[in-house]
Each structure stands twice: as structure tokens, then as C-alpha cells.
Amino acid sequence: MTKRVVLIGHPVAHSLSGPMLQAAFDARGIDARHELLDVSVPKLPAAIEDLRGDDYLGAQVTIPHKERVVPLVDRMTEEAHATGAVNTITKEGKRLVGHNTDVPGFRAALDRLVGRQKMPKQAVILGAGGGARAVVFGLITEGFQRVVVFNRHLHRAEGLVKHFGRSASHMELRAMPWHESIIESELSKTKVLINATSIGLRRDESPIAAEIIPPGLLVMDLIYNPPQSRFLRDAKAAGADGLENGLVMLLNQGTAQFELWTGQPAPIDLMRERLDAALAARESSADDAAADAADAAQRVASE
Ligand code: NDP
Picture: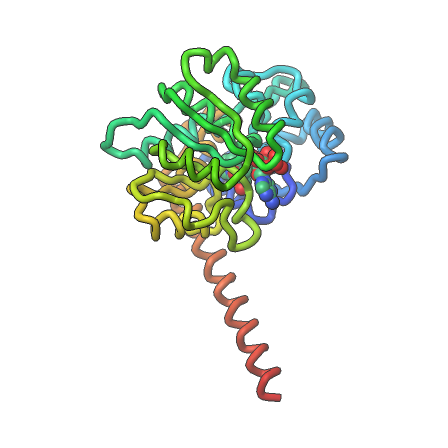
């Protein structure tokens, strides 16, 4: 029987996981099919319950469900416990196991961002959702000494800080209200700036004003589609020391997922290739759509 692996999120259309994972299943001779499942918040418990069926190999969980899935699985791994967020579900018979492969994915992206420089100790994080939790856990375990989390709804950032209370007891982890002057002041004291909000995913917008980004920062956007978000373009124009989008994180969280579901080593080069190809195809169809819109506008103007 062909097994199903579903990506559960809302929205899911932006995701590039499908081509990357399907290529890996096919290359390793695994009879599995990747599907996108757009699931709204009220329908999440039923969608997770369905995974107990024999036809499922497992699932990916994405925006905005990573924290909501926690009480719906039967067991969680150490990293899922530590972050309070689940992005991967595997099966033990009918039992569901929650994992968090965003953590190793983020570590790979951070290593690439920092390169040969000394690992910094201060970071500012924008956002406090499931992705931000993996980022904060990655920074804590990397030895960061001061991490400040800004979020539109302050209580969510405060909840995140409370969650990490014990594992962050040796360092300063703070939640701060989303005020431009406070963000600007914190940016002047930091080396690493990470966008873990979903602002920039659907529209060409940045979570913060370009003017408040100082030069010399190492800047990461968890968003990978588009590959050059406005946030990253603004950071580049401000004179960032390094830039990284979410592609390396996506690739590495995906290779870890593949290994969890199949027990086989992931074909990482092939997965990277498919990811690049899928992204290029998306960009060219976006260009075509923009060209079609321009043509249509010109036709209307000349009629
Ligand atoms: P969640 O839904 O859990 O969190 C969304 C975050 O974005 C919250 O902090 C939310 O703030 C903030 N936000 C959303 N809309 C607005 C807005 N209009 N104004 C201000 N803040 C806003 O999502 P995730 O944490 O799972 O994902 C966040 C982003 O990171 C997504 O773009 C996702 O694609 C990306 N991601 C990429 C990964 C990769 O592998 N590259 C892995 C994980 C995530 P509030 O709490 O106030 O609503």
C-alpha cells in the first residue's frame, strides 16, 4: 500500500517540502506519497486523529499549528518537549510521536550564517510562534548569553520565555513589547537578528522599518519563499555582515524528517537540487504572472 505523508498547515501552498521529500522517497524506493493538507485550527484535532490510520507514514506540521499539536500526540521527543513545539509526527503502531526537526535545521542555518566568525552571544528574535521556539532553543544550547524576543502579542513571547525558564537559567532570555524605539535600542546591542514571524510570506513587507536596522549584523529570515524577502533586502542595504534565508533550515529539517520516517539516510544532494529547482520554478511562474498582469494592464490602457 502506498503510504501517505501529509504536510498539515494553514496556509500550505507556499511550501516547497513536497518536491524535496517526494524526490527522496522515489530515489530510495519508498512507496510513499507527499500531500499538502490545508487544515484550519478547528479541524486540527480530527486531522491529527486521522494519522493513526494504517495508510499514514507520518506528517509534517507547519504554521500555525506547531504548538497546538503538542497535546494531540501520545509521546514527544526531548527536543519537542524542550521547545513545546512539534513539526514532525512519526508512528509507533497507532501511537503518534511528536518531534522537532526545526532545531537541527536551525542549527545548520546558524552555522552557515556565522561562518568562520566566532559564535556571537547576543540575538534579537522577531516572533514567538513555533518556529521562534526552535530558534530560541538552538540559541540557548549554542551558548548565547542574551536573547531578546519581540512579538506583536507580548503575552505569547512571555509564554515562550516562561517555557524556557529552566533551560535558560544561566543566561538572559527576555520578552519585550513590540515598540519600534525598543527594537531599535536592542538592535544597537546585538549581533544576530532573526525574523521568525510570518510577515513577508504572503506580501512584500518587512516586520520592521528598514531605517532601524544597523550595519554589521548577521541576519536570518526563516522565510525561504520568496528567497529574498524585503527584510533580507533591507538588511543587505543596511550593510549586514551576513544574510541567510530559511532554505538551509528547510533542507536540514527535511533530511531529519526523512530519516525519522524511513530509517534510511537522506539523499541530501538530491533534496537540495529539488528544492532549488522548485524555488526557481516558483520564481519564474511569479515573473510570468507579473508579466501577464503588466500585459493585461497595457491592453486595458490601449483599448
Ligand atoms: P506561527 O503561526 O506559530 O507564528 C507566527 C508568528 O508571526 C507569531 O510570532 C505571530 O505573532 C507573527 N505574526 C504573524 N502575522 C503577524 C502580523 N501581521 N504582525 C505581527 N506579527 C505577526 O508560525 P511559525 O512560527 O510556525 O512560522 C513563522 C514563520 O517561520 C513562517 O513564515 C514559516 O514559514 C517560517 N518557518 C520556516 C522554517 C524553515 O524551515 N525555513 C521552519 C519554521 C518556520 P502573534 O503571536 O502576535 O500572532
